[in-house]
Image (cartoon, one colour):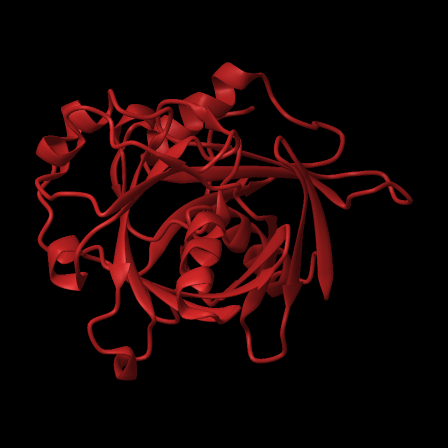
Length: 274
């Protein structure tokens, strides 16, 4: 069984967000949850994706699941991008691929220049009062706070400026008690001429990820949030982690399109049977 590690939302190795990808034979479908979780824990990446082909003629082409080192998640953008990248670079698929996942049908489309566009459900944003302790846990005062709905389970927290987002050194243990999955901190770009409209950082200690390098799923909330403020549906976000990465977003009502590049950096073999 081959394991590939793919850097996503980047066109350069060792940047962006790495994801593990295992393509399973249709005969095997998914192994039991404990085995999948053990593999994800062994790889110790933000997410490891497991996919297997589905019979032709249905509503999706592949079944897809994602695991952090500690748990299965409902939605993951960067590991979906990684899976689509592997399918296309190995000629296992071409053009548009439909994935059946816990959050519904997700579609990916590969483009001739090598980028991939993800079609995900737009996160429903609900304004909230900042929970007690949020400012202290982040180390910055929120301008606004939004719940991001059931599939994400994050708090989207608007901060004063880009510098504040970049300089965060949060209390991760305290953050883990404030949301179902994590906290997305964001602000408008200081200088849009640099090629991005907003910045973000994502902290998900509750699911075993202290800081995620580039969180595709978070942009299903960031896109509608910033599109309203900028009055534009087409935006580019920079996730300002140490590895960093760019996500181009396009808001389509209840769907959010996210486009990025990916690079396979490791292609290895799992030496124990599923």
